Amino acid sequence: MTLAILATLAGLAALAWSADRFVSGASSVAAHLGMAPLLIGMVVVGFGTSAPELVVSAFAAAGGDPEIALGNALGSNIANIGLILGITAIIVPVLVHRGVLRRELPLLLAATLLLALVLLDGSISRIDAGILVMALGAQLVWAVRTGTRRRPPGEPQDELAREIEAREAAAGMSYRAAWAWTIGGIVLLVAASRVLVWGAVGIAERLGWSDLVIGLTVVAIGTSAPELAAAIVSARRRETDLVLGNVIGSNLFNTLAVVGLAGLIAPSAVEPQALTRDLPVLLAFTLALLIMGFRPRADGRINRLEGAALLAAWIAYTAVLIGTAGG
Image 1 (cartoon, one colour):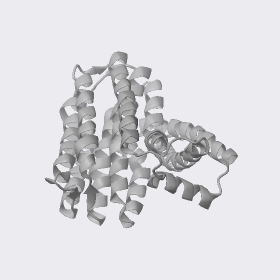
Image 2 (tube, rainbow, N blue to C red):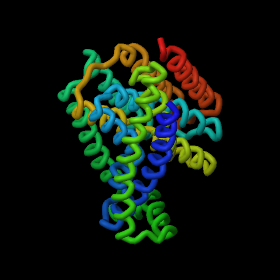
Image 3 (tube, rainbow, N blue to C red):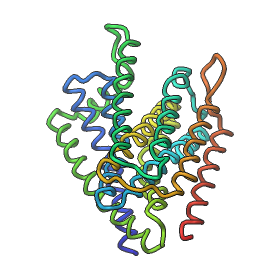
Image 4 (cartoon, rainbow, N blue to C red):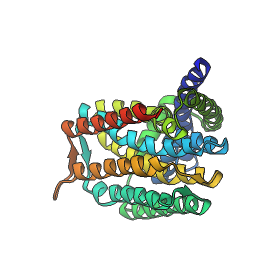
């Protein structure tokens, strides 16, 4: 048990550090190659922030523990809204632009409903997984096209591009160094994920918890830790729109890519609790985000009271999971 706990903690720490190195390196490589800032934000950074969930879930599925993969995706999404956005809104109210309410949040709700639909028969097949991955591809194509149309020709690079340039200048990251950090980050991500999954499975077996519950709690919270740290820093700088964008992008990738990849690797049955308990909770959190952010004819705002409600709901849900885990 002690070895499993140490392996889990070491895996989480290495996962957080390697994910940060991978995102920095990959963003710099993309900038050096002349990739459009929109693509860097959506594909490189969006994938990078979900890389821990993606790699952990892939190895869990390949190792015969697909329920950890599903639990990781569902638990991370719930933690992103309840824990991360909840804490952020308590520090400083979160601004919700009208464009986000019209496009991205309904898209996230639709992706969550699609996940519920493909899991409704109590299993995830390769066909189900393929549908999720294709939906992600369609969403990326749509977002790139609409984003390109909204940006007039010759417009200066957006804030994300300037941020990437500033980071490169501060770090002095050359093209070769960027590739080194990208490849090294991926290698360490893979190694850390193997250690984390091994430790998490060991803890679950000793405590009598199911793979689904360990994925919803230990693994989900651990893989969301980098986003939580970044969210607190952004909240202190009052850059809450970045936090909201990261949460929406991460949840879309988790819902479509993480579950989809795990299903392609290892089709499996789905525990009834995932359908009767966890998916409804995720849907409720996503709907709450839409309702809290809505303001007629104006940008929305998630205030401190609503943030506290989100955080309290997440704590209550996690307490129920742990309290009933051995039952």
